[in-house]
Picture 1 (cartoon, rainbow, N blue to C red):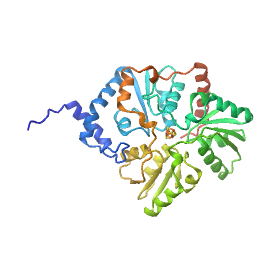
Picture 2 (cartoon, protein in one colour; picture 1 turned 180 degrees about the vertical axis):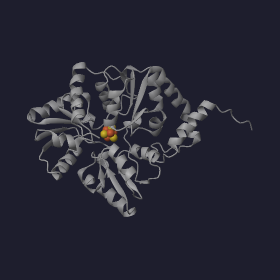
Picture 3 (spheres, rainbow, N blue to C red; picture 1 turned 30 degrees about the vertical axis):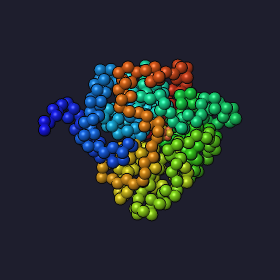
Picture 4 (spheres, rainbow, N blue to C red; picture 1 turned 90 degrees about the vertical axis):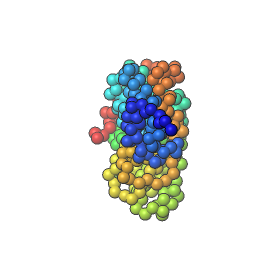
Length: 349
Ligand code: SF4
């Protein structure tokens, strides 16, 4: 039987992809990453990487998007804070944000001269979309003496109404050090609960009032799940994100941002880890810490999974108007001030 002629460029790209993706067991679409799977996507990743150079573009990839995006075409990978810093420093003409819309808005706020595009305009966020500018203004009218703190998972409009932005990595430090006692925290009710408890534990006196948003991934984890996993896997370490409920956070061995969770897993000896966050982070750790073992079912963010290589390619070839992020300049400037304040108040790494 005649053998098909191999294209050396595709073969080299498939090899490159395989070196990272072969470690991914927790694939959101249940794929097995072998040479054949990598060959299938290689033409697309080659085209995207060529388009990036030609168009002076960078691709920012959140840890929750699919692994072929992170390791195939991403220039930067990380959590929202890390990526917002990258967006600020990016000198590229085009920024493609493979994440969700509020993150792309954050990139546009910090890099107003760049063309910022989102692969899929429908990639919202249950947290960010839980409150708008009007909602924040109504709360401010009720609590005029409060300092308004917004989690980075919020729209540009909400950031423009807030005094300071925070991430899951710096929230405790920033809230603890704000001069005001009364804090209006939007949009994550569960993170507000965790901050309230943690600051009380640290002896910091704050009144934290929150709006009512939750993350549809993190609010699903339960104490029963942790108990069951611990019974089945002795020595297990449970690692949770502060968007989880307080009851879950209390039972975890470690609570932190996705960046801090990764660091904890990489540096902690344990036979198994249960990660209470979006499944994409497990995929990243399987690539970057292949000796670690993970248990637990996969919880996917439907918004993050709207990203795809095809949509990224199309956005790079010729972005549709709905893929381009635009912001009113007055609103952008006010939102930028809120984020800049976060950069000023963040602890030094
Ligand atoms: S995982 Fe939760 S917080 Fe993150 S984008 Fe999805 S819905 Fe929003």
